[in-house]
Image (cartoon, rainbow, N blue to C red; front, side, top):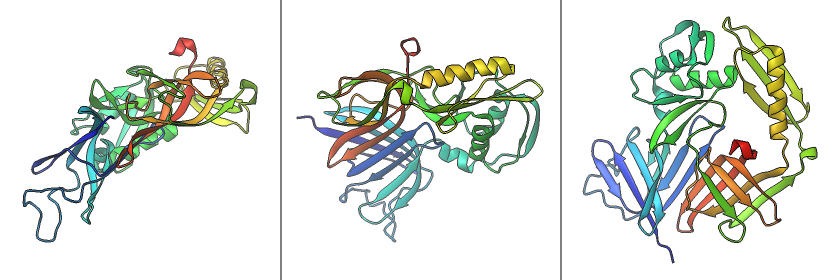
Length: 328
């Protein structure tokens, strides 16, 4: 029988390392700015007499935290970020956020950009943070852009809402990097196979035929003068897809909108499934599903919830965009 193992490293005024977690829940989601982690420490944890007179443990908001989980001493890093809050009541509960924690408090001076690139704007937003970033395309033009929000995270949300550019941290070569671009990046993603009766513990799938899927696409493009071109295509009452590709005419944008809808309208699963803690899966990875009804397909991972504790080590994986053979 596999033995659960874990490691927590907290780096603040002092570095603390523990090899036990009572409970841990990690949530990664491509649709949100911030990934989160909540852990409960064992009741009998030792702080080497470093607890304050009022009973508070010697850790605080802003301390860096790394969570590693696994079986039989085979540990993998599942979360890196910062402590958002500490509830000192026993058992001690620690709530954490990924690198977006830094950007939620990183103040930005107002500035007006003229015919700016995305690279210029993001470089300015991250000045002084030492945060590495990756853009979907280094040549994306934003045009005239005004920074008016107080914190960098708010400006990233503004880019998402107005320019259809997602922002979130993802792991690339074992390093946490801020990604900005399409909802799903095209690189640094692995493919993992899941089979009912082998490593799918539970499934909650709805298999939909292509003809039954309803979707609409809102497409937009900006030219060098920040003139916006828009085009809508698809079912008015369908799921919404947003795409943005700069420098296109309306005819070219129409072509991409139609392709996006056709790509989305593939027979396949909608829903989620539960599996063991290994093999590890992250948001944006590809999963090959072989379900109990005999249907199969390859999908990008939209969301993953990782649970570790007394009840074992599990991953709940929510399926995102289906992939064709050429996209895998």
